[in-house]
Length: 293
View 1 (cartoon, helix red, strand yellow):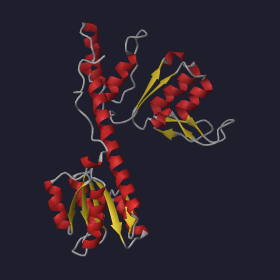
View 2: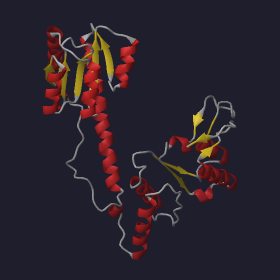
View 3: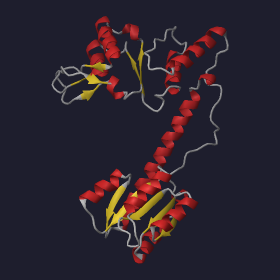
View 4: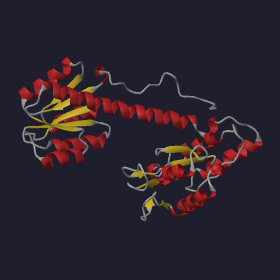
């Protein structure tokens, strides 16, 4: 349905070890050498520094994917402060803090500043290797998600939807206006005319593009089940409700919900949905407290 596609040669970074560069910042030479040799034996490209200034010099000259930082640098500075400065320059850098003086406070602060993990010395080699692998796998997943997000956005750009007649061009102009608003939109058309395509295009060209797009077929579920899917329910609201469940409206998290075949929704439920959309709040089954969405 789209007029152009992404270059098939484009790929996101993989989790192959040789594709990543790791920076080790440790002022104790023996410990630094152990970590560096361990990582190089695993096939990673490794850079090393014993001071914060040296680390920043390397970072500013090369692309670093993962930084392993000693918490307390005797040469001055803190691994946490260094991590903050590094992530200010490149928020995608994964950070691992290593320390012989572990505390709950420093662990919490490390995670707050964006560290992926916090390791205490002495550590098992296999443990460090596993943490590094997992950190880089998460980085690869981030890039994969960003690639797919970009690919999806390209697919649903208005100009990529095929249609040249005056009527469809008028629809496109209306879509461009509506996409810039938070208005609820009614899309009407015969089966097979691309209503969901239009809905996805509106989503991908709006400020909600990075949020969720959740379609639901209103004619495929019985009324009681549809209501619980839309609004959620509280534990004990009905037989089998063993725990709280958030509804689709809340789960969208400021994204877009597509009510497919909304005309098949029971009228009583349409009234509840209308009020929910107007007030931007709903009542889960079994609750008297509204939930904002």
